[in-house]
Image (tube, rainbow, N blue to C red; front, top):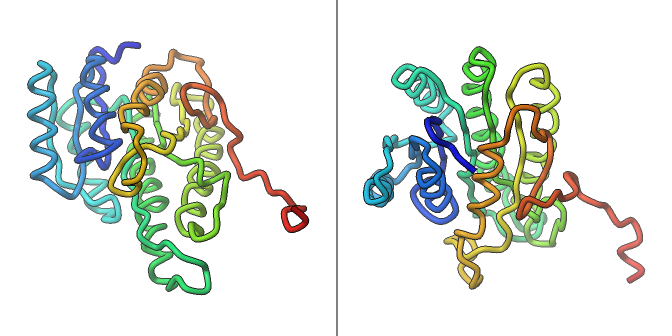
Length: 242
């Protein structure tokens, strides 16, 4: 799986899954644009990529700031001539609790990052990719979109919406050479999931595979470990009887 010569943008690249994906893209040969809110952490990731003899740019960007997203992606294309890969990894899960207990403002804050921010990145990137007749969009979703566990309504809803958005986008750009897919990294150890003992590097092979798909590859799908998962929640109407 090679990304040699590709220009890749990874959001939420300062830590956790985003950091590992950025390193994986660099190892595969891509020039990686690191984007997140924490510039100091981004600089540290850039130094790791330098140690791998890779190339990178650091951009402080909040995906919830639509103007900053548009400016960043336009700048990347202006500097490098194109954007080949967009990995939408930035996400939060800071509105845990039952619906009756979570403030609507907190619910909206999760959607602003996980869904609207991802939409903003795709909205800014797609015209460039369509014009270039090449693009690979990797949306980092979650198994929470399918499991829909109590206490995770805000996060699960955002990720289920990401899956639906992935399907719609894939259909909209099917005439171009732009492939849009979602992936579940699994229950890996991150700031949002500190109790796991699975390293976030487990997500890298799937992220690199989706970024390096050949022309005519799968699109509008949801993967974990390169195995296809159901895209939308499987609703069990008889759950109460169990």
